[in-house]
Length: 178
Image (cartoon, rainbow, N blue to C red; front, side):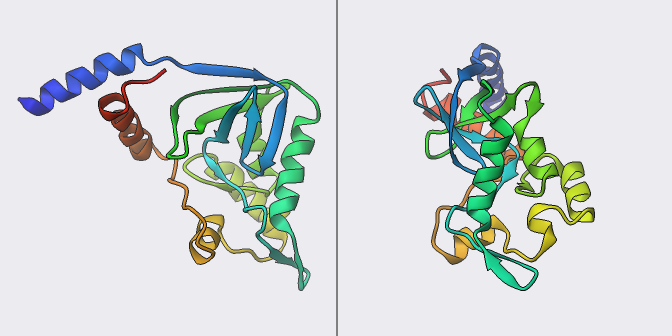
């Protein structure tokens, strides 16, 4: 009975949960995060190399984290970015789908090979891998593995279970969603 009451409460709060939309000029931090109007945003469903991460292409090491950042900057290319989401990660960043000029930035980053699918966009990753685009043109350590090896904070996957758990945590212990 207590579980049903908890689910009813969560459902009610989810219905009232505000979907947040932020639009404006974006400042790109790395290949999967940006800031719009002082709001830090993590692009949902992708994981790009960390800025300090290096990869190998044609037998040479290169700064793939910086190239991933440059790829996101190029995709935005001065356009207004619109990000929509309702939950936050453990660092307080809004987890959101972001678009520039009507294009899904997460999908574009994965299709270009500069991010791996992280709960979404698996079809785009298959195409990038098959075409040896971006990171797939050489060898690289998965960003999550690189963070673990370099003691950088691990990102939680953005699959449906993690989304549900994050929403429940915010609703029940975080004072709701704003």
